Length: 413
Image 1 (cartoon, rainbow, N blue to C red):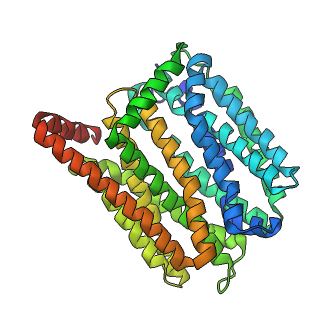
Image 2 (image 1 turned 90 degrees about the vertical axis):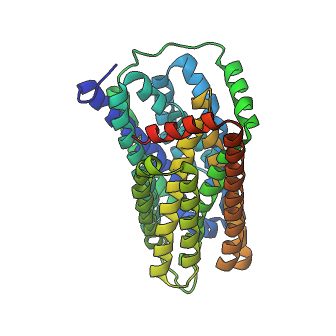
């Protein structure tokens, strides 16, 4: 096992952080330029949302299959397949002539992104010592966030000054350079053992987790939370480029700097679980996000930005707690449980866009607030149902509840 500070450790962490940065740049490239693309293709807001939704749907249906494939072929081959497929698919987008062709290419991009996202953490777990992994995962997640912010802002600025095809070409070149660097620097795995007949095992695990009502409700919370978070930003982009604000796409894309509030709040979850129940933290995060949505309803750009900061901080806080809570609550096949959470997460992001953009298209921002409120109510209802289930469990088995609380406390240390 590779420990912190060794040359091999640096090669692994640098390579996977760069890879994470690349995939999230490409994933979110089109989100800030959806208003621009709607004009280019002369379609409605809900129709142009397929450029984003197709990518997240591609991820959601591919995460588990890629994870299973990596059990047979190894993590590194799947990682490299993903990273070299991304610039090839990106280049194909430049030559598309219809929205349907571009949507298909974006769906393929989601499948390629899922290959890296589904196995990179498994590579680190198998090759690094627990101490080294605890440090490395922080850098990996930070690269996720920075890649998403950079991809959105650069995509918006390049499109504003040139056009979307030139923006995509810049990302193609950058992704190819990054893929070549990683191909030469990422070490081969020495602690990987190929597994056979994983498909049957994973199918059983998936059914087991979906039958666990508490776990499934937590996954639904994750999906609704992401549906609100990512798509409130998308709608805000349309709002800012429309009258009376009429901001350029490049300037409007700077709203994604508000994501940094989520980067900070996600780190605070470790302190929360040392003192409080994670479920109450998920509720708190949803309430903070809801307050941000209400504040952003006021027609003032500073208040809109303040609202987005609260939306980001609350949503990231709730997501981090829910994601780790699912892993802790799963009694078996924890990796499959977290993969299923991400499946719900990205499906929620896809479907939520159609809901909120339809509300924007038909009723304006107050319609968006009404549609989003339904999702917040669903989250509060699911949290209540989980809490009721916990109370019943504690009444029937007090010892099990005590052990569960101890596990939360230990997880935060």
